[in-house]
Length: 108
Image (cartoon, helix red, strand yellow):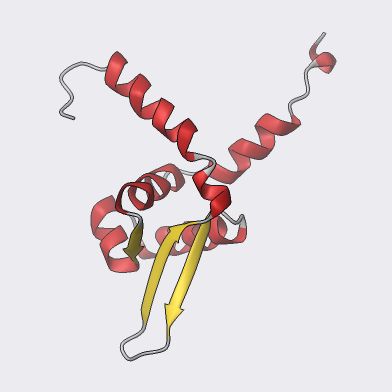
């Protein structure tokens, strides 16, 4: 019975967003369109440099984010959603809607 279930698509999708901070990163970049590293770190609060850096690299490698580096001093790096990242936003929007409808005492 269990062998009739194709878990591969679900496993693939979860592998892209697995981790404590990845959905938070995608959320903030979705809402702000383009964020620099420092802005993203401030928005996330208590994420460590190592964790944020690691997740950003993974999201970029998975083609969910676009990293743009400007050749200047000090270095300027911006992050934005890739076209593939944008295709994930309806799922994130549904999660936000579900959270709003099923939570109590949350500000919008």
